[in-house]
Amino acid sequence: MTTGENLIKDDSAKIAEISKDSIAFELESSHSVSLGNMIALEITVSFGDQRHSLKIIGKVLDRNSPSGDEKDGIQFTLKLLQYNKDTWNKILKVFEEKQGEVTSLFKQIRGR
Amino acid sequence: MAQLTLEEVKAFVKDQHVLIVDPSNSTRKVLKMAMNQLGIPTGNIRATSHFNEAIQYVLECPPRIIFTEFKIRDRFGLELLPYLDQLNIGNLDRCFIVVTENSRESAVAEAAEEDVDGYIIKPFSIDGLNAYVLATIKEKIRPSEYYQQIEIAKKLIENGKSADAVVLLEKVAATTTNPALAHYYLGMAYRSLNQKNNALNSFRTGLRYQKKHYKCLIGEFEILDELGQQKEAFIAAKALATEYPLTPNRLARMITLAVYTRQLDDLPGFFELFLKMENRTDELIKIVSASMFVCAKHQLAQNNYVNALAFFKKACVVSPNRNEFILKGIESFLAVNRSQEAIELFKMVSIQDQVLPLWKGLEFRIFSTLGSSDRLVERGRKLISEGIDLPFVYIKVATIYLEQNKSRHAENVIYEGIKNCPDHREELLKVIESKPDSKVG
Image 1 (cartoon, each protein chain N blue to C red):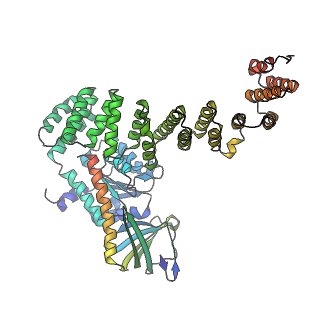
Image 2 (cartoon, chains in turn red, green):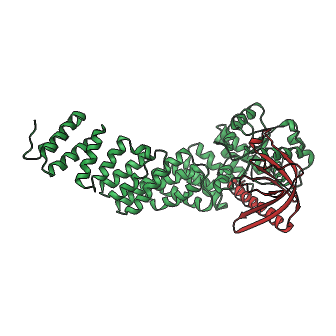
Image 3 (tube, rainbow over the protein chains, first blue to last red):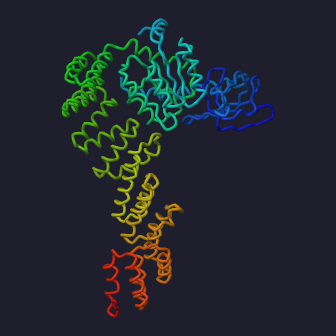
């Protein structure tokens, strides 16, 4: 992830929500990221033998610490501005396929 | 079936509460937003990262929809279900959905076995989540006639009216082309009436309709186990394990059956399953470590020392009573004069524990099988001077002195041993009495 000229690697990042043009993720520290900042982000997603990496430039639309205390983590929502839409769609598809697999197994075991 | 109408959804959630239990701030926030989109006001949504607080909310204000992470610190979201049962909230009156980063099959199986309505993997989209929730609400609002009757039968069984449940389920089974689920509950009804053979027949009938019906496979396995048909139960369990992931309790039972029926070659495979499990219960840990110990002893009996050592190490690593297994393993190797393997196990003892009398004595025993006599005497005398009074140390040192024709030294050691270990007087005296020129004063 880069803000301005700074490259930040943060393995604590957890993606909370995704959509066609936005991503919400949580970090353990703020990395001086503010509302309105432009951020370059690199995401890698693996699932089975699929692996997709994508660089995104987005604008911080929302920045907050849901617990009220930034020490507990900060959530950022990025509006995706520059990114490869095909790769992003593939990434969204990976998450969908994973959910599909889990749902299928769940229903099979539940057996209703 | 027609689409759910907005009015139906609104009616389901009107004046109802939602509970969100998740350690992640982001997830709680996103789920709140999703529920707002379904028309549930923020004031009716409670969110917490603490399990105990979640229990409080459930009891104070029973929620209609619950979202929970699979694991919340050291508790499991599924543990909230009994609290809902306590409140007698019917399955059709609530939605319980696991929303989790845990996509392991064993976790999915655990959730699906319980009365959980959905399993959603993070990250999710709000639209995707709401579509899932709406599909779940639809099952509640418009359950099929078949499913409604199943729910009635389940309630009858829970309320001790299993005979009535049997009558109902036999009728219900005749109304559909795939009555596997009905036969499963018929089996459960018979089981609660202690008619185990009827129960077995019902589960097997269900499997004739649907060969891989999870609940019927479980039922068949469990009833065979209850009937004491351990070999058949194990075969049924293996069939289940080839199709579906195992829950911790089921894996524990399978391992126990494998040991009872001497299917020891299957145990390494079960160990691998154990390693992949998220939720390792205390019971499972105990059983896995014991099973590895059994494998070790079996390999030892067949003189496969490399394999025996590997299994002993696994037992030690898994068990919370690690030292107990290390001790047993070392004793087992010493009994067959395998000192090198005993040393390998000894290395697993922590540095802090190695200075304790028990382990110092054991180390001496190991080295007494391979050390030079002089070094052994030196070690032994050091232990004695440290106040570590172990009879076999005195015996070994005295024996070496006698071999070196140092009778006086041997006697001194033995008399010191008698002074410090009076309960072993007879045993100690035998060492010097056995030598023709030794004198007993």
